[in-house]
Image 1 (cartoon, helix red, strand yellow):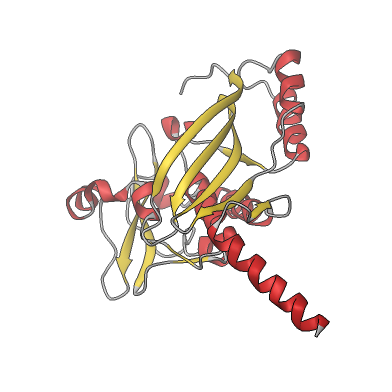
Image 2: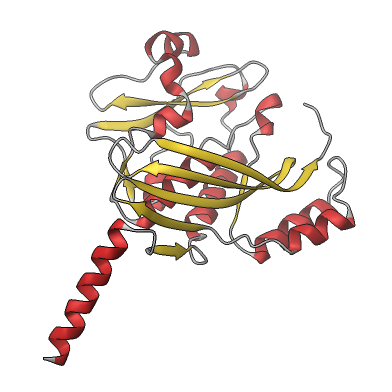
Length: 259
């Protein structure tokens, strides 16, 4: 009887958790996906394809495979029948530009063709709207991680402004500060800025606000903006669009470098 009572209590709690803001997780241990993506990008940049550097735009198949994102972000999947692909667009901000490819269709050949076929739907936030989630708190966090970090490889010239980092812990803060102290890349952070960064509460959190929305709150860092907390209210029903967003600057910083 006592066991049955405990099971009933657990069932009631889980139902309350699913429809209220009581259900919240601190993402102290959710750095694995972020670290995995950083490692994927680092490996990709070590083997930057020569044909991309020489002006080619179409993938040959031996470059970084964006399907790897779904291997390390395990609570989200591509739309059925499609794979995530990219064309490499050069110019003043050379970078990979994503699109969804039907498994039965061929790769796009050029950025000009991309503009005709895909258009504005190639923006990363639009790409993310077609990703399917398993409905867990982790899945909404992973969606945020994808939108923040996907595409940070093979970057040239102005595209290097895309340097957003997700800050998980105080260890991450210290790593950022140490990296800036050990670099001559632009202006250093002042002692006041460093002390302010160390005082931040940076742990991400995710919660279900109600049946209709989940809220993700994450601290990020950029050399062109500093430490910021981004809070997004996201639709729990597919498509998982951002219903509301707030960005709070916690420690303002700009390295002063212009590409």
